[in-house]
Length: 306
Image (cartoon, helix red, strand yellow):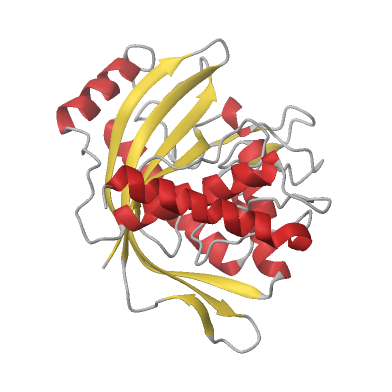
């Protein structure tokens, strides 16, 4: 059977199943991905395409959940759309999970270098190596915070919207009594993709390639409920880092410049943004983008399991 015909048949079967379900689909029903690295980007099935992404738009996005629809005794357009979306992702996942290598093209080193050169036109002390180190450390810290289920340390490193979205997702795991284990984390490559400025921010897109072991356990029993601790995943993400326009990298002769410390704009007390975005004196939240790059957007590009 040709691919278009097979796809149409699958969609038709899915539609019939949905109609037959009748009132069995209730409002608020949720489908959870598992296992789930920080942000629910990873999952059981491999993929090699551009799925929905976390962003700083304030809405729920990514693989967090697909809300059910109250049918009121019959089918609905909204429910049909959900079924089609589910089938679409299943077909894509199967395509990516057939053992074929990822078709995601690597960013050439010369492109990454050219982006760094572009940033240095407005920020003379910016270096590609320091940004790679910053992103690598942030990725490792995110996975550790996700596994320990302590998301507060990420407040200073993410935009407010992204932090809150991912905190809600982490709470889903806590509520279900599960812990996501992310082990043997290795950052294989970080490349700069493009840079641009808008009215308020510097925006830097990067391609991040990592290797992890990703599985979920029951908190009480310690039993593995999803994933495989013996299988490794090769993940490719696209990250967007932002900072307030006009913020510059500290010169190399500034001692301890990686430990970015400024004064709280509310009370004037020193605040260490590598520890928290909350002032320890007046407890105000400081906007981290005013001092350094923070993560604004995460998009999964590819996942290959071996």
